[in-house]
Length: 378
Image 1: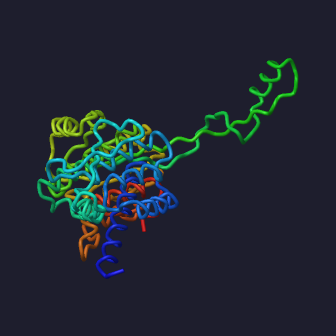
Image 2: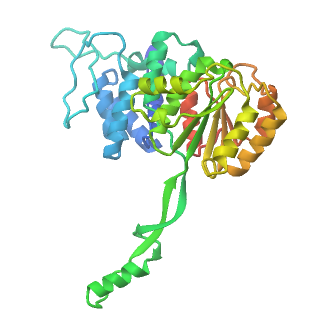
Image 3: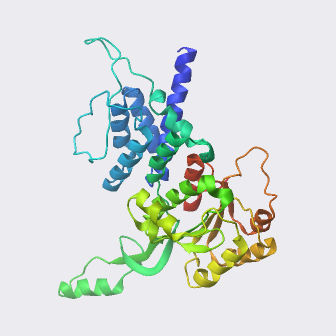
């Protein structure tokens, strides 16, 4: 294999692994075994043909009917061609594809009758892979348009917790009532024991999004990330600047653009100053003690620039840490070379933070989604 082929192979693997990470961020359980099966399937098929990649992933990465919808959404966002008119045919589907999915073959570059020469898969989605690692603040209009499609495929779910409610199960403690009812139903004849186990449900996720002037380059993307997260029904979203505003209802609109317009109308202090300590105290007094933050995963999306009293912010962070299950701080400036959390607000808050992650790019937001689910932040 030549050096070029080797490089192409590495690029293709990087693109496909990036696609697998995007699927995980979209809520699809793409385990390591499934990803390996996906890579082997693509290697056997034509790695340069988008239709082959689509069916290889659909056959190996999806485990349920719900996964198919998530897969189609992420595939369209990741591999969609923004270059213009269709240049190939849509692969035949064994099941009816969703209307918004558009899958095209790579253009034929050889004469009819000869073996098609497949373009490397890296050429199909290299721009998407590059976009995943770019700083959101540096994107142009076209990049931001594609970023919105990637963010629309996100899903944010908290870790599961056991509840006091019991549900029928195949194993666990004996369910006496159901067992006795079965005995009576069969006239006292012996019947199999019935079991029950404690139910599980995902923890609530609370997003506190800083929309002050210093966060202006990231505010739109972070709120679109929050919009995709709020669709799970267990996510609360607030904005922070000079006021605390609950925008969960505005983000409940299905269309992202309509949701952003509703948020813009509801938030009066967009690109204003920052009073993190006072607003965090207001959040805890009005919402936290009432149960919104109790036992939840609380995520602060902010650069930590505090114009108020840093000691007040430190005290409120300690209150929040005692109340919440986990406190995560995502700072878009963390990935910059030479960054150190020297800002007074950030330094006061860090001792009460369980995970301190970056939040400057789609890949960083994918990582944030994994940390919210319980992954290590290292």
